[in-house]
Image (cartoon, rainbow, N blue to C red):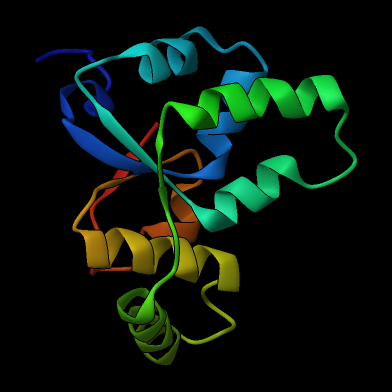
Length: 133
């Protein structure tokens, strides 16, 4: 049995906001994750909004934008909007936060595992593969 993190074996993944926050705080595992050329990393428009939401200094914004520039942005489209609505119908507004439902819908439609620091928000959603960070 190996102690390797489960995300190390991924070839692609949608990454939740919490992993970006760890990276920003200098977490060595997060730094390694984002530098791994074997993983094609995607992020949601919701995550971008959360990372760049004020209050944020110009220097912090520039730092985040440099990282995001090397990754793949997923914008909500009609398929993701339909999946979002479906997830909210299945799981309810009280059990799934709206932003989390949009991130989960993006992972579902794009068939990407979701790497997150917040398992509690996503583990109930059976339509996606949730990978703990």
